[in-house]
Image 1 (cartoon, rainbow, N blue to C red):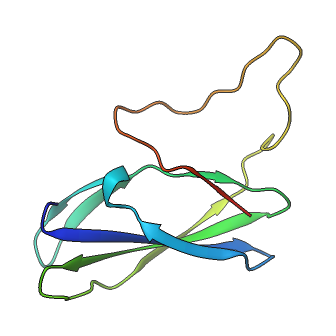
Image 2 (cartoon, helix red, strand yellow):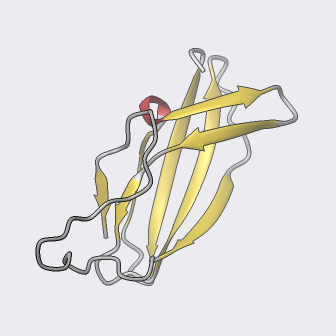
Length: 104
């Protein structure tokens, strides 16, 4: 992890609103040049979007960039709805930091 940079790129569908950021502080990974796994935590605010395409790449100190891994995250049911009277909103919890919310 220390010698690599994890880049997260995202595109909201259908608007095409996009961006990218250094996801290293919000992620952990293991592996070698052939196999591995990545855990990363971001928060997406969907607005009018129906989904978001997220692509992750790793770059080592020599400047070698991995193939991108892309997933489509559908807008969750009830996303952007206000909580019920007196209620609170919550999501999955984890021990690591989460990125600032990324808006459509």
